[in-house]
Amino acid sequence: MNLLTDAWLPVTLSSGRTTKICPWQITALEDPVLELAAPRADFQGALYQFLIGLLQTCFAPDDEDEWLRYWQGAPSTEELKAAFMKVATAFELHNPGGPAFLQDFDMPEGEVKPLASLLIDSPGGKTLKDNLDHFVKDGSGIAACEACTATALFTLQTNAPSGGVGHRTGLRGGGPLTTLLIPEIHQVTLWQKIWINVLSLQEWQCQRTTKPTPDVFPWMAPVRSSDKKNSATLPTDVSPLQMYWGTPRRIRLESDIGEGLCGVCGELSSHLYSKFRTKNYGVNYEGPWLHPLTPYRFDSSNEKPPLSLKGQKGGIGYRHWLGLTWKDPNNGDRAALNVRNFHNERYFLIRPEHRNTSLWCFGYDMDNMKARCWYETTLPILNISAEQREVFTASVAMLIQAANEVVREARSQIKSAWFSRPKDIKGDFSMVDSSFWEATETGFYEQLRILTEIDTKERTMPSTVATQWLKLLRINAIKIFDEWAITGNAEDLDMKRIMRSRRSLHTNLKNLKAMKFLSQISESEEEARDVSE
Image (cartoon, rainbow, N blue to C red; front, top):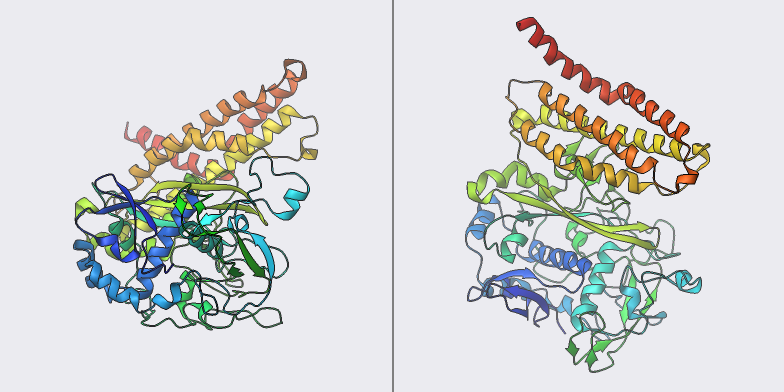
């Protein structure tokens, strides 16, 4: 199968019908393509990145004017096909004796593994040996169709976690977050969802490619092996486009085993794959890589390279909103390039009725080689004028900082209520945090909308916002303490200890740094009101 000439992408059409198409058919007009229909959540995110990468590589617009032209009217399937065919030889899935998509160029030998090992959430060898695969069972016996095999391969290479000695992580590190803009338009097409995340050559100084060079597609030449010192691949060593096609893992698919049902999507296929060969010391990506679809944390002293934001325990929520959609001054988190470009350029180019956009954030929460959870969520995108941004971001950062301080204090006092020696107790208390974040989320976005209407003459947070946020945090901190502190067997509860911890929570909330700052802003309103009266 060739991933550019064969129909393999699962999609949903405007008519409601599901089918499979070639990548260049995403702009078909007779029955428009509305959405991808991958059999797994991580596959869905990977296929979006595959299409964005393909367009960025072969069909990136020259400037924002050309981007707008194709936003207003999608290119024909013939235009896309002509651009994609120039690199078609790099997209052969199985090509004995020649280059194959995301696979080692000339790997003569390697450890044979079941195809299920391509799936990031598949249990590893030690997990199986210790019989710890309670929730994700061993799928070593499955075979997959060509479409699912190709998607699994791309998903692994794009998100690759550490895989043991010499088995390299992905270009963005293991389990990176990806943030994609999704237009909120009636009957939005897949083309619009993809195209809004493709950067112009004017914005991203990187030329299109017209041939399948190893500079862009590393599997088109012998691997840049990393088995020796000073063999890392830096951003200056290859084309920036390789960020969409990184191959940290050395993999080669074994021959297909014929017809059968795919163990991933369940469909009948004439070609199934059940095994692959792998070898360590593939491409070792190091240095200041900045993938256009991923947010990064920047070191304030500029001594360390930026780190991609990862999926993390507790999921993605409003506490991450500022860093994922703008820039968080508290920790150095900064939104991905596609998001920043939307704020600075495209928001003003497209029609007002098309400006409502959300941010789809997704990624694995990895514990070294083990996938703990797949997280994805949608966050609102709010465009703020240049005159408002400084006050807006500082205000939002203060709201989030206050919430972080409050949830830490609530968690600490709940532990004190539960245990006589709370500092000696280790364990996962993320359920307390999750309760707090969920309870305060609606209130946060209410304050956010008020902040978007700040007068450009204002230089500080409105006192009404500070007042409301203080009230919300205090009420929910006490409420969550009351809910969790009395959880457990009645015989084990120490009511004196619980009440002592509750009083401490009341007192300590007033003394938290961010809460004090908000109180000062809130009190300034009351003082002004008293003076006027």
